[in-house]
Image (tube, chains in turn purple, blue):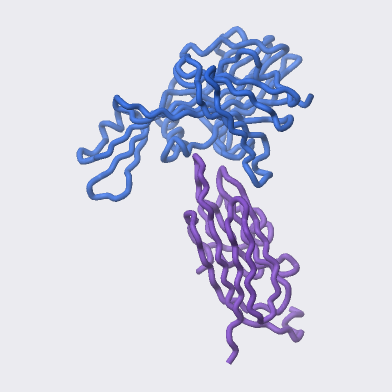
Length: 153
Length: 270
């Protein structure tokens, strides 16, 4: 509630995440469950960008997402949750309005009879354009975050 | 062995659409080695999380033999949703053999003229053949055999009498006993296929706790010409050994045959 009473700069920007689900050559392949979200500096989830899931039974295996708020989230979430996808390159975009500050983009992938990978990309939300790229090592390929401030009239 | 329709349905559901996508199935006894007579409780489940029970398996396919090779009834059998379990009263010196086999299962895939997707069905071979649509093409029948085992020993290990039926994939106990494994020693496991050494067999060794790590941490071995792998243990603990083989058959109505074997083990610290 305090934040509503205090002067606090909030701005709207387009958040774009490009990421890759790598092709994995294995006898038994299942598509990974993917969670893509933004946490504030208190590790609180402030935005869910994408949730690609199947059976609810295994949602908890996205264990960082689950721990940080996934367990409280009512599904489905319009425009966010959906079915798992096959290996390939994907782009998720959304417009977010956030107070200036420090945040972390999180992407977590977990695959049945496979592995789990969680990539965190810290960033500053300051009405400036940024692009940050990280490289996954097992369940994720390249992950790229681009923040583009919406032009103010 | 009696297999009710419900049991068969259950088994085929576990195998999903293709034998290569079947869930891991395993026994987990409370004890692998004993120094005094004791009741051992055995869990039986299908789960890809090692060793975290998930789906109870039917006890009708379980056989239990004492060190003399006599078949014993399962004590206190219970078929639960997440695991089935039973007791074994281990009171004779030597090695008890717990096994679940069952008859082979059959799958069919085929194309229909008005459908782009491949059609799948499973069931008995007779029923699959009887139900096959007349206009089906690219028909492929697959036969799947599996055997799940665990051994429990009172005192020193003995070699259980081999299964009467040597068809399919079997463990051959020779120089190394499955209940006398230590993390400071390697161990050898030998397999036979239809009674002959199973060369070129893929053997996957996976330790406990897959739920609590980010990787499956599997070791994969291939059997030599004598059907043997030499396993180096990453450390003490409980392990699942999975051996599997796929045969492509050139003649006859079965196009492919799958064999799967599971063995649960305990490796002691030195």
